[in-house]
Amino acid sequence: MATTNKPSNILDLSADKAPARSESISPTEEKLLVVLKEGPLTRDQLVAKLAIPRTTIFDSLKKLIARNEAKKYPLFAAVRSKGRPQVLFSLLDDKKEV
Image 1 (cartoon, rainbow, N blue to C red):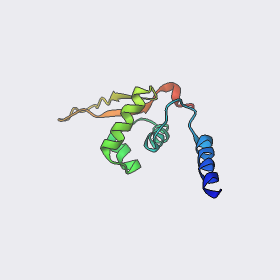
Image 2: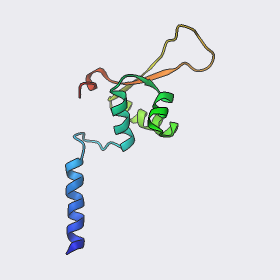
Image 3: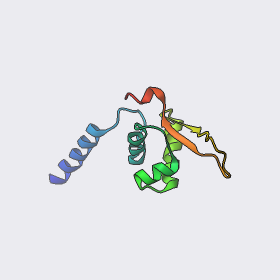
Image 4: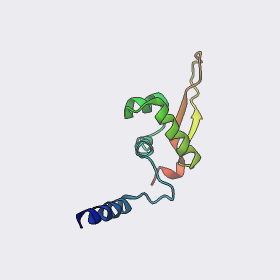
C-alpha cells in the first residue's frame, strides 16, 4: 500500500507546483526570468550571476524568446570596438509586472 500512496503523493505535489503556463518551463528558464526582472543583461553577465554554462543559458533564452517572454536587442556602445556587438536580453515590457 505504501508504494501506491507514494506515487499518488508525488503526482499531487507536482500538480500543486505546476506553472500556470500551458507549456512546462525548465528550472534554468525560471532562474533566467527571475534574474531578468532586475533589468537587461548580456549573456556573459547572466553566466556570471547564475553560474550556468553559456550554451545552456543560450538555449533557454532562445526558448523564452520563442514564447514571447523575453527579447534580445543590440547594445549600442559610445565607443566602437572590434568583434561581435554586445547583445542584451530582457523581459518583454508586459512581462515585468508579473
